Image 1 (cartoon, helix red, strand yellow):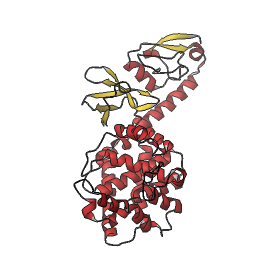
Image 2 (cartoon, helix red, strand yellow):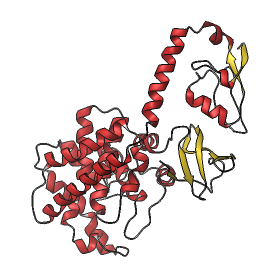
Image 3 (cartoon, rainbow, N blue to C red):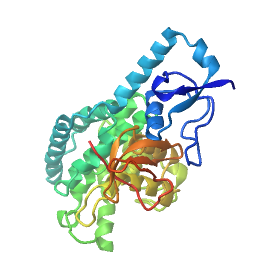
Image 4 (cartoon, one colour):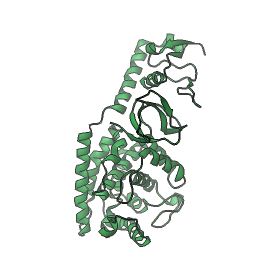
Length: 368
């Protein structure tokens, strides 16, 4: 392909890269035939690349109208991805939802029936926020606390389940149903003795047997509601089943477990592992994503796992993060097959660290 070398500062959006661009990486940081976006320019700048091979045909034939259209499209996408999160407003909305759910939970302990319509109204405003402000997902586990953990967990599972359903292309009606089912998956915990739920040491085998009954309790509490579809009631019953048969309550396998159950299962385990518990400290969400994809391979639906990685593991270029060694840096490049381990430029030294190569390090958390 005929090409010319253009100065980075003069590079136009929509120009086509003429050759793979390699910078001490196994795979190109930008591939041949890629159309240049603002993100690509930031990556090139981060790697101190000043000259870029651009296809000649693209340089001479692109009209001003085409360039303007590309610029507008890329800017709209960039604004959507990195628009600063109004943490105060979302956190307030989230905490109100947690408190409202907690009040309902107390009433279930006393024997009150589950009000599905009320729960749906609690969760859907938060799901709508996440579908338009994806960065909320990166901070969701920061809001969780040991106090009222069941409420925090249920709200988060509802949010994540709805976001996964949206990412996987489900229509609005099903997104609402899946998010509501995710929220309601643990309503049966209200029927488990509080001394077991709130135990500050590891659960005994007997304790865990009681905990595992919550899926049955949850199903019994929602089975008569006309506002929840039968397949969502099944999803609530099955959300602790695993594809390899290692789950409960029945030990179902593979096709016996509905896709809706698998969506809630992934949302449930992700939030549980990334949140602080009475008997366990929280883990990095990026480390947890790796564990779900690699160490727990075969237990979870890979399509759902990939959707979660796309939502919670693939950070926009220039996102500022703290690494597990305490250093702060910004994302400069995402590996296609391992977005949880991007290249990071350290703020203090300017050094670029490839987390895909340096496995001892990982992203601890995303900085606002």
